[in-house]
Length: 478
Ligand code: C2O
Ligand code: CU
Image (cartoon, rainbow, N blue to C red; front, side, top):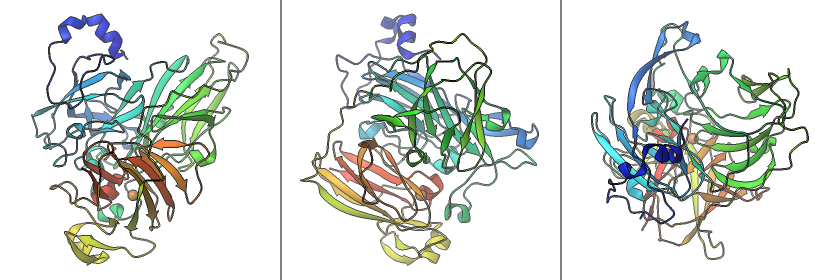
């Protein structure tokens, strides 16, 4: 793939300069480099997977592929992305994990009108943070993402760690009918009220893992592997036979490099993990990358016998330069408790819908809702949401999140990454910034952040079937 910077140099920057939209709240700084306008078009296309014996599956993808194009920028760039809707349904694009002005957040009815079929919306935002991010629609996302609308958005560091290769693996799955190749029905209430839609075809960068995905490496090679979980509901936990990968970032933000350990490996929907993989084995060898949760082999790391790149082991990778995120003042922080309830197992959920107390049964059968956040079950973006919390601009907050359900939930906040202070009362081994935090059933997690950007920011479970059935809310910063 062509890096944007190289593309800019190759195509004559002067030709690309004139269009500067006045819409973005971020100014073009001296450090930012004006980028050409990238075009993304959600559209239908067809692809065959072995499970259906070669019968084509209708997929939805950006620019007719899934994942959509890998967008690469440098920290400080001004991204300009024009999205023209080639579907017959409304859509919009959310830039997951990117600190954007509210109007660029891509949430229909909350930050912009939906992009109707045939219409175009131009996004423009400054890339303040480097890291591994991704993009996806926020309209019926359990279906739109589930049909293939997602892609990687990578913002390179000013001085990235030295590696021979920098690769993204976008992990996902599809739930197909083996007889027809069609997607099994979306929006099934019993699925929304349980663990979400788990596919029967696991994919890496759109390819069926059953088709034999190979990462061919040379002895001594150092690879940066960016894992992005774009599935609607599947949690991954990767194990690399014969290798000891270093974790260098969670959700794009640098962490003290440490070896991948079991406790770090729950990669819930929406979450990312940057690894440094030192390929220390010998020509002719082959190793599996396995998903410990499904028990499936996902890929093979093979050593086809290229000339060794180095013989001695490399030292631990350096820590990535930190992104300049406002640090919460924990002494002054205002604290809030947020409980998550509901689901078809475990303690009985109850909640509020449209301001009325309601039983779990009524929630499910009258409204198609199964989950609550702070006792509210939100209906996906049909209107402006009433905020769960109203926060003061630039003040610090600590949220105590408690999962009172028998299910796991990766909880995501738009607009700013947060520090994870505690998992079940225990501080993480190394300080963490994340935008999505994995809560196992009955876990308590404490997060903190500065309410740095005004707007209505979505706060939701990234199991998209859960988000669509109530596990969503808005945090207002004013
Ligand atoms: Cu990745 Cu609210 O989204
Ligand atoms: Cu959930």
